[in-house]
Length: 337
Image 1 (tube, rainbow, N blue to C red):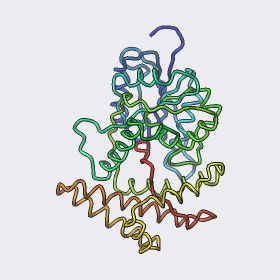
Image 2 (image 1 turned 90 degrees about the vertical axis):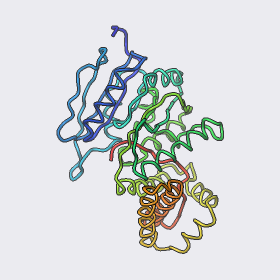
Image 3 (image 1 turned 120 degrees about the vertical axis):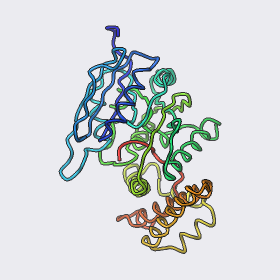
Image 4 (image 1 turned 60 degrees about the vertical axis):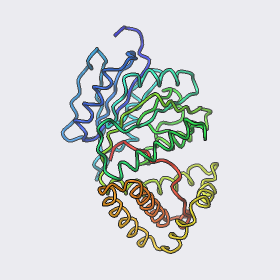
């Protein structure tokens, strides 16, 4: 490593994933681009995360530690990323989740696509070789793959709605000027930051060759938390960013859903009924997936996800209660559970 200033700080928040973090760090040691340092933010892991002072090849590593709020098991990914961001000194900051292994040219690709000021770039989170997913993990990977393919094929441009910091890079000064991550968000804190970056004129770029191999391992209950948290996220976006007219976006996306799904929602007006059917659909999909009926299982999980989201959104207090929206956005896969 030369004495010249480093180009990139790579920030990795982690919580109780010691073995996975070791794999992520090994993938960083093999990067073709070498002018970077690593900042591991240990978010109240038990036991605390040990990490080497340097990776193989001389890449420096720092470990920072968060403090959980009273009654919480961790400080959360937004606070952890902010801690790393404030400690960073390089002009570029990359974010990588602790359940993602970076391809050898991952950082080289991100830097090449994002070195110009006013640019934020993100790469895909892909299924690793030999991965044996649960049905809901397979559903997440498939949902993301569809989104990546549409951006790659030019069906719509990359934007803040796809700014997932499980695999991303941006300019440190622009991240700080936008205010960093909103620590009130427990899900999609990266997407909300993307809104503020876009408002400052930052352009988003999808770099399909900046590959991250995502070893996702969710339980069914942790998967069901995702639509509930996205429901709260959408409500908070409507309140925090009135300039987006977010409830109108919700109504428009609802109108584009299938007739069958809209009819099912009308037939199940009570949130408790939607949640019951969502869980039955998920369990049925689990059986179908095991029997080899994977396509049918994926449709069943889409139904379960949508109904859980709608039930959560309809149960929210305040002026957005009763407004429904379909989930027309990929899951922010990865990150801390």
